[in-house]
Image (tube, rainbow, N blue to C red; front, side, top):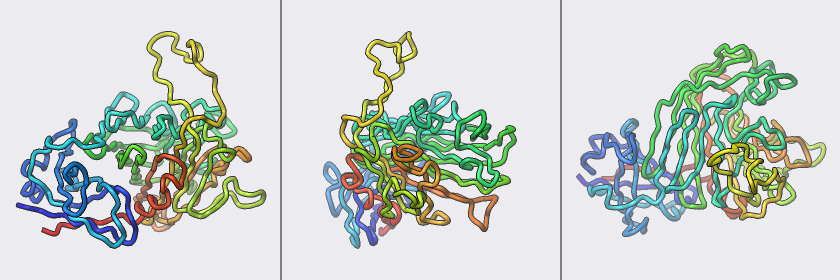
Length: 426
């Protein structure tokens, strides 16, 4: 049975957006027989579906590869090119075998004992570490220049703030448990931990990959005080536009303080902010803020960009295992880098309680003129109507080529915050 999808831009332009539409298994099977529940591109519930873009060329012959998730009955695909505000594009679901077309950016997620490794189009993108720290974190996150846009453990400044991830409690404000500073001893420790209890779901697919896992948060004494289910979705729209969507679902939280849940990342020293690189935001606040001005501000998005440095070192092939002892290893270097510019942005979402949220309270989201060199923080608080849960929030990480202007960060944030919608028309 033929089926046509209509994708509506709404009030904003969109550049190669990720589109999703709910389709029941019997409907998708009628349009593309054998789709529902078919395992492809790895041991998942993801299945490839072919679409024909009848209004604009979406690829070779106007063919687009989509991904159907049988567990939630949702079809997702990247709509290539520009979707202009106020317009609609139509796509026919084709009954052909999915092997007829190769997807441009297939995602492979591989689990190890301590992490999930994500590759896109055969290229390394990121690793999601679930053991080895006080909280899970992403490092490296490879940008279009081939180097990471976040720092890992061991950096000269704040070496205990690792990668990109979710922290909690700040410096124990209001008596909250501290899962922010990775200290075992005072002044900022001892702290709690976010304990990975197991992966619920690992998805590899022709369009995106997912990691879903359960976590228990424990306090200083190892006592549970919160339960969480976290989902990360990885996808690329192009070589220069890479995305991670994160959703946090808090089942319950019982803490003596009302500590914030903090999306936090530390930028590479190679970006050398603000001397060479820059932090920009939707509020137009200058970073670092002028002397005497509040360092925290509310913003729907914040971006850090600058020159890239060397790619992350690969694991040693053999002894010696300490890289500094290997011939040719360079010492730690402060910026600036000498590679192409790239950046990373965090987008808040209007469905989150309290949108837009506070940026820069922790470590200031400042440059070297103040504490917390090159750090971005976005603070969420439990909603007043459900202080102990359940509640959820979501954000998007956007990794891009060039600075915030080159990467069209403001437009990408608007596209995320008012995403295009899709309906079944036939």
